[in-house]
Length: 256
Image (cartoon, rainbow, N blue to C red; front, side):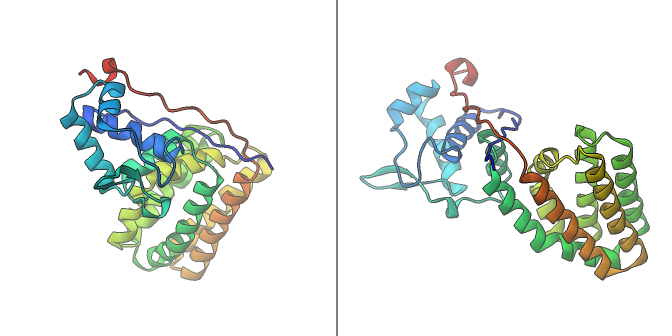
């Protein structure tokens, strides 16, 4: 089986320190700065990015707060172990998409989905409002109308899952759904059901989620959600990859 990394570019930051933080963050996530190693010193980084020392220090503070870096006296600024990274930080997730997502990332994403989404479907079956149900059904209809390998299909799929999380009535589940939206969208794009049989199965099981929530059938809603997530994992197994290097910033990019 071929392992591959798929790069899904995200929007560039609007401030100098945010863009420098993004660039260093992408390099860390892509492994260009390995865990436990020092990043270059202030002088080298300010020259590399064409920014002032205050801008650089703000960038480093941002990365420390997100768990990617730590500063040590007489050692310098060091890349932290992957387990310390805040994966529920929207920037850190976006930087993973910029650096290139691999099967480890997709599997980790699927595992957290399995821990949350089936329960969200159970709660949605008990708590959904008519407005929630209408939104879930609209998303389902959009999936039926869009080509399987289109952005529209992935967006409709995402909208359905976010609507289920919202219908659960649980604020934590709703928040998790919004935080990982970009990662979910990337996952859905990569697992597009291009074969007719795959498309039929995807639509069938998503419809089962919709119907079970509408009927208040919590067990079926949960089982259908588990199947949908596992089915997506199975389609990821055949995906193929290329790595695109992150582009270093120039002084023109930063405006300094």
